[in-house]
Amino acid sequence: MNSVDQDLRPVIVPLDATARSAAILPVVRAMLELFQAPACIVPLDPKAATLALLSEKLPELAALTISDCGKPAADPAQAIIHAAQERNGRGIIMALHADPSSGSGLEAFNETVLREMHCPILLIPPEERLAEWRLRRVVLPHDGSPEVGRAIRPAVRLAERAKATLLVLHVSGAGPPPEQPGSLVTPRYIDQPQHEWPAWAAEFLERVAALCGKPVEVPMRMFVARGEPGREVVRFTREHQGDLVVLPWHCHLEHPHALTLRTILHDPPCPLVMLPADRNSETS
Image (cartoon, rainbow, N blue to C red; front, side, top):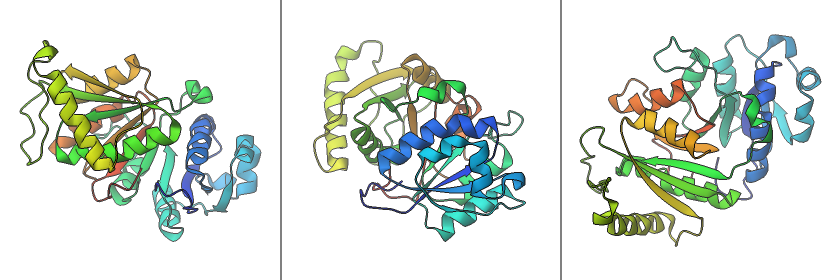
């Protein structure tokens, strides 16, 4: 979802007439209001082939500004991809359809959309607790690498829009530190943070300000954890009641570095924003 205020391109929202789609609508509505964007509803159920029929099943749609309506297809993934490409969608918001037996933890159509679309995608686990969803705490996992650092600017801008707190989590002790030029290695003495934490935190904040082009004005809290990154992100997000996790990724779920992502997808603690690697830092 682009950060330009007057960008009226729609957000693509695939829905069917099930309780699963109804459960994600509070998040859909909140995000569309946040970005002042219309929704392009893509019906996924052949029995609700028109927006009118879908609206009968999901009366909550009346609260959304809808710009257009896609046509259902035999292949849900291709219907979503076609709508996003045809309408130049600024992003996709869809229910996370879990499949514990798959390598990614996702059903095939979720996985296909993730692999083929190079725009931000918001995946929402359809849970009843989302009924009162508000964006108050944005979780940004960060390992110090420049690749993961791509998510800093979108996460900050998202928190600014929502007047939310940004919770930055650095996970240490789960393998060798990143070696790419420009990496910001997590402090070694995480059990005794007084040794390195103040200087490291100051350097991190300077980097954030440089990436954003200005001092950060959102409340920001930084945390360090030790363990396997995916499990620590899930644990931390639940413990701190995070409302949204911002995750950069390489569009390859088989990549060795995708282990963290796959772990989170198998047990999502809250809605997840996926930022593909080839998107620039203007995206949020």
